[in-house]
Length: 357
Image 1 (spheres, rainbow, N blue to C red):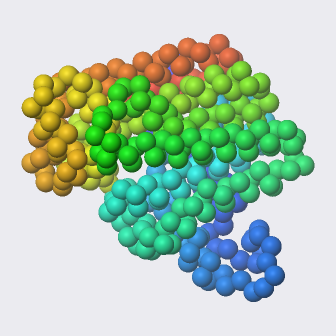
Image 2: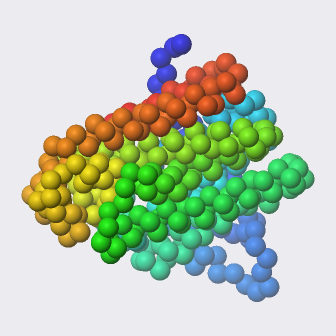
Image 3: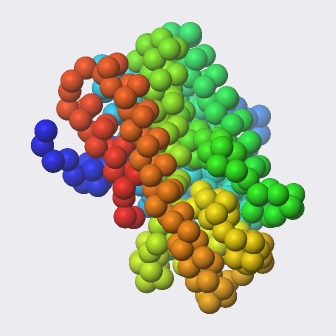
């Protein structure tokens, strides 16, 4: 098999993804493209300031766009008619970006992808409304495909969306509660994996399940690909958390992220949980104290990272991420015919776990 440059492949897909998004969410809303019914005059200048401008400003910040790429790869691997279904990539990608806008407000984040978080530019009120709107705007894709796809298929897609969006909010609730430290208990590994399956795994699982449904495969195959994509999402989050602990301050800033941000948030990442399971009491208490203080003191952040590293938690977390993806790939391998799309899908899943950015 030829060596696959996954980063180049994703970059090549970005232009197609952006154009597809713009078909359903225009950069400027006007009388010609406004989809909702209205009885009276609409102030489009205000509507653009409140929805389109912040939405497209946020999308311009960048992002990996890996969820729509996952959707495209699975659909193509299953032999779907891409001309009929590729527009559905908009749904998981726009919903994902909406969750990030809201997440930054909940975390009181200053930066996102190296630029001021959206609520720092437009205010919390506009950012909340825009983020929430992004949960609903992409569903226009479903509406516009009435008559092009069967009602049964569209209903299946809509049901997947509702289920996964519920799951996403369950995951966020767990994560927020843990890093606030209000319950005076620490999550275990299984609880962490389920939280991450809900929070991060759910949008990749959504993309995969929709790809299978739109490829008109049965629910048994949908479950297998959903589990595979969920595992990718969990592994992606584990790796994202590890990068926060293993890259230098200069490297984090180059990626547009704050150094030791997860420590400041009090985040119970898998590495933190593994460390807490093995630390002797004094160091365990020290780590919990630093996490619950939500400090931005670089010395304390470095102390916490050093404590975590000394336990071998970094290595254990990396092993878990690789194990999840390897085992879930085995379940879908036989469902896919040999093709270039299958090769890219496998390389793509491995990249997400082992990436350095």
